[in-house]
Length: 528
Image 1 (cartoon, rainbow, N blue to C red):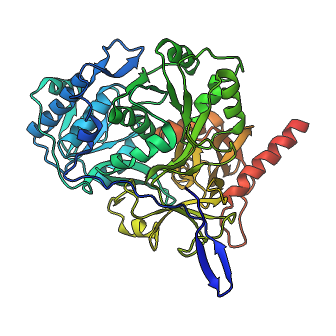
Image 2 (cartoon, rainbow, N blue to C red):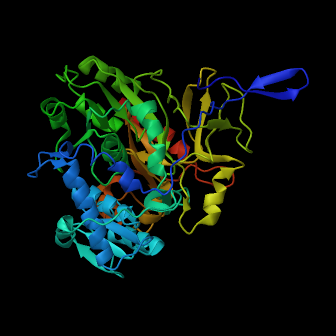
Image 3 (cartoon, rainbow, N blue to C red):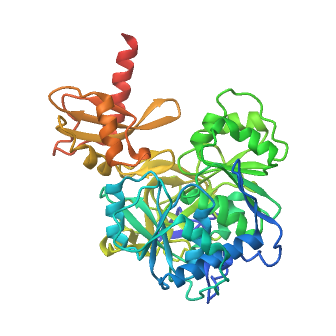
């Protein structure tokens, strides 16, 4: 049973219980292995079953047979274009089914796709391309693209590959690189996180420990194709078990989701907390007779939103906690629901611990510490690309530290206590304040700037920029400047001019004090 007691002697007559989960290891990932082959393993068993529907788009549903054929056609086409196993492929595709087909096609051929948000600006992409040195770029019209230093494969040419003769799966060591995703680190520079083919094998623990997913389910994910949450939960997980993935077409309004869930008989709904919150604004009942439950990730789910969803639908939302470096590993699930105020349990097969602030020793139960994952977890990243020091800094002995604080109860449930850094959360994306501050610091008339997450109303947090300068700047000018330098989700939603920023005795900006300062200023303004 997860969360059972571990006794560690600290005195000949004294023991304490350490906050770590029991470890029931899953079967090891087989070798040779290919992630894409695993994802589409059901295609030959149920070729005519619908694998994917893009709801609202003028496209046909994709059967498993058609999906596998297109994926292996892309694998062939990329090889014919001169790409080799191990080459990195930067994906600059829109929010269409072309995205997962190209992603799996590259992996099928042994190449390493690098998905990135369509919101990224050219300066951000230039820095990303410099980090990963892509051998090719897949590009759709209207999507920002860095100055090409390698071949660019346009969308029409990519689609022509769908009908090519199928390539063979590129099989190999499950520890070799499969894909790269970007995450923001405390340095202020997005880091390239390299994941192995075995990462998909680790997701089997999420299937039972969070999603409650079966081959008969129809899972509707509200996110865009190029979000890692959508790619994993919305597509890879259903396909790996032979279920059907439902994705709303680009431009679908959140208010339309209940009708889509009803009309397409969705049995599981996946979304970020903000989507649930906006769906439930009217607090009226939702007619979703086929829905079994919802799942949530990306940021902490408010108990108020969770309760409202249950009132509206009669269904529970099961929340998960994770990060780009290891995906989700703590959650509740239909078979094991959790208290609304906690994160959940370690998923079956996960080995986690709450460590002392310094060192690699698990703390006693009900004691705050750093959430950590064992280095043997099959979902754990290989490395930060070209950043060996940053990679090593994440490890304490046998543990990978998340940088987030929590505590574990004797029953194994974990509570979230915040970040031990100042990372912000914008609609489910982790955003470094340093990255935003660096971009804004070039704005004329601005002397100093600090950014933090602030609560603008109960349960709603946005990025706030606090700055000093001779006088307050026009908010619209600040927004235009930010939009030219940063992806939209990274841009501040409010700007506050201050005489000086709050600092510690040694001059360090106290970002956590900014949220309290904003609350104080808002309360003062409301009393006037």
